[in-house]
Image (cartoon, rainbow, N blue to C red; front, side, top):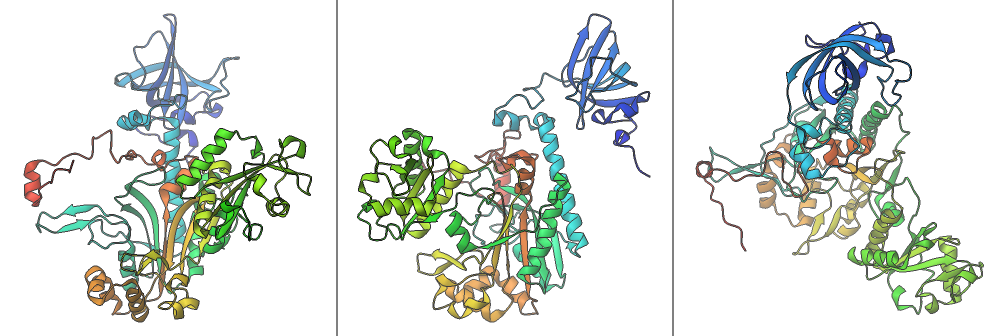
Length: 596
C-alpha cells in the first residue's frame, strides 16, 4: 500500500506533518504537532500561528486569542482550506493552504530561545553548539541530517546489492600505531593496561578476510586524537570496505558504485564514470594529491624558459607558474599578501607579473606578442625570457602570472595551494567531480634513523613493477594505494594489502622494523596470516565529508549532530571534564599537572 505523502508521520497524536499539506488536502480534518515559529494576532477575534516541524511550516488560523509564544510545543486540530485571495505565500510549499477553525492543545511551554530558529540570522558557532538541541531545529540543520541519512542508506543499499556483509568491529582495541594519535581507555580490570579507540577498523577487517568473510563493510565510527579543522573531527564515520580475491580495479568498481548511488539519492542526478590520475601527474599539474578538477589554472613548467637565467630569484631546480585570468587588477597590497602566503607555505618568495598592453605597462618591456609585463622583476628579464614566459603560460592582457622557483615538491605544493586560494570554488558548489588518484609513493621521507617512512601503512602492497627496487631504491617504489577525491577534498583512501609473508618481511626490513618489534606491534595479524590469508584490498569513504559536500557546507561540523569545536571541546556538555578522584584511583591513574 502506498502511503499518501501528506499523511506520512501520522501517529496517535497527529494525522499529518506540517510541511506536507497541499491543496489536495483541502477539506480534510487534520491534527498537526510542532513548535510555534511565529504568532500574530488580529485584534481579539483572530490569531495566526506558523507551526513548524521537521518538514516545514503551515499557517494555522485560530478564532479568538491564544496564549502561546515562540518555541512552545503544541498540537493544532482544524480543517485544511485554501488561503483567501491575495494571501497565498509562494515562498512556502504549504503557501496555498492553511488550517482553519483551529483548536490548540498546549503540550509544553518554552523559554525564549537563545537565537532565532531560522536560517536568516548568523549565530556565533559556540552559542549554536552550546544550545545544539535548538540549533538542530533550524531548516538548514534538519536538511543536513536528512541528507546524511540518505547517504548512509544509499551506501548500505549499494554494498548489500554487491554482495557485501555488514560486520561490526570492536571499539575497544589494542594499540596498533597507524600514523595518527589514538584515544586511550584505561582498563579497570587490568590496572596499568589500556585499550585504544580505533583509528579505523583496518586490522580487524583484514582479519575478517582471513576468516573467510570475503566481502565486508560497515558504517564505522572511528576516532583520532588529531588537531581539528573544517574537514576533521575527533569522531568521524566512514564506509569501511574490504574484499578478498579482488584487484585494485575491483575496488574502484564497487566503491564508485556506492558513492555514485549516494550522489544520485541526494541530488537526483548520477555523475558519470570516475576518471583516474596517477599521483605524480596530480602533483605536477595541480600541486596536490587531492586536486579540484572543476577549474583550470594548472601548474605550468617554466624551467626551460629560465634555464641559465641571470635572474637569481629563478635560479632553482624547478620554476613553475599559474595564471589567474583577470588577475592583473589585484592591488599591490593583495599581491604582497599572496607573497606572504607563499612564504608561509614554505617558498622562498613569489614572483608576479601583470600582463598588460604596452602603453599601460608604465615602462615595462614589450614583447613580440604585443603584450607587456608589469613586475618588479621585469627589468631583469631578457627579451627571450619575456616572450618565453608569455608563450609558456598563454597569458593574455589583464591576466596575472604567479611564479615560484624552488625545489620541485615545494614549488608544486605552494602553487597548488595558491591555485585554490585565488581561483578555488566552495567545496559544495557543483558540479561533483570525482577523481581516483593512484600509484602513490610507497614511502614518504625518512625517520631519524634513516629508514623510509610508510606513506600509507606497512601492510600496503608495493606496485608489482617496482618490487625489485624495494631495497635498492625505496624512494622510487610505487604502492598499490589509491585515494578518492571530490571537489578538492579527499573522500577516502585504500590499498591492496600485503598477504604474503615474504613481501611483508621485506617491507618491514626496509622500514627498520625487526621481527621482534613486528610481532609486538602486529603479532595477532601476522599470526593470523600464517593460517591462509587470501589476496585482499579495501577502502574507506569519509561519510562526514561526502555529506558536507552534498549539503553545500564548508565544514563537516554542519552535518554532524553533536560535533566538537575546533579546540576539541563540547560547549553543550562541557566535555572534556576532569574525572572524580575516586574514579581515578579505581582506574589506577594519577594525573600529572601540566608544566608551566
